[in-house]
Length: 416
Ligand SMILES: [Zn+2]
Image (cartoon, rainbow, N blue to C red; front, side, top):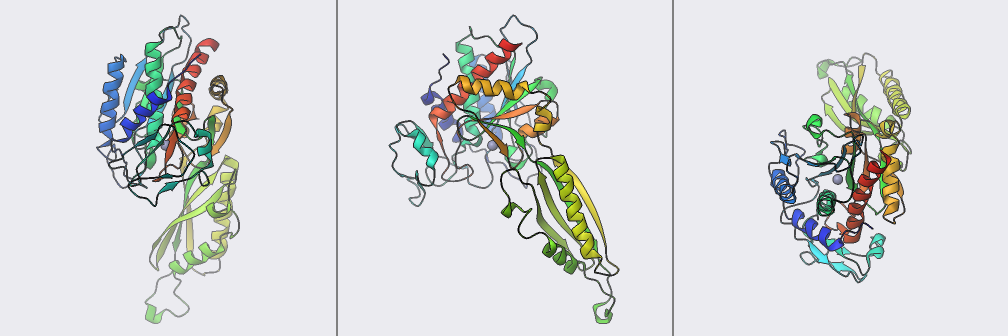
């Protein structure tokens, strides 16, 4: 029986969230904020203290460490467990004061530093499952930072468990902590050679039992509109204003479908995010999302056709349509290595939880890792109401996530 103490993981999380690690989407440096390294250094020191003798952290804020395999089997793939140290730019992460509600009683939780911030079962029904168990919140002025310090705490607690229970057989386990996930740059400076893992798991999602093996495939699209420019005083029947064409294209987009505000589940969308320009030349930038590449292609074709239809009404105007790949659905890679998800399902079941399979309407580090040589699925930590002052997490969910890591490592050994 693998059993990890919820109190111990909670204590770890509370320590890590007090280090400010907010990332910055406007920064051009790596990491985007120097302070993320404060947590990386702390974690590296703790890993060395546990006996992971190769633990290192680098100039970019990554932490790498190995739990060396102890099995006689030599063909076990090296498995990576990964979490990100940064917190979201959307909500302050400075002076986080975590509160451990050791025996949550089911009543409303009024956060002490801002009494307007109230956590209720009515608005967060998942709280109900944590009555009489430990719940961690922030104090009302900041986010908690469970996204993704719960993942960090869970991996650290599992590492400690392996060090204290050397009879548990496993292959090489690689620990990776990344900066800048929240600003989409978590894998930019990662050294996959140094990491040396064949398959991976990020610990970076919600309800206990959740397993995510699918993200959007994502492109950017840019429409560049060229008008016809003439001195406005003598422009009759000659001038064609690119700004007005941009307006017409936006107006011609579907109104009740195919947008973020009208889709959910497995539906994709086309979403204008910026318009820049002058009367002579205007660009519209879009993001395009779908779970399949065929769907992504259809969105592009439809958008291009709509724009061309509008352009045709303005004599002399021209347009250019450009696409840029952003990231790809990790399922396309994971389907070629079905054991990654199958073993995770079995590990979750061994902890006594029911699996919740989810598709992510966004991207993750896992989708990027899957395309740079490390097929990667995403496992729950319990995090709730992320990127907000009402963020919270149940300690028993984190303990189950740590137990999942232990079972998963054992399963890779057993099946090798
Ligand atoms: Zn995250």
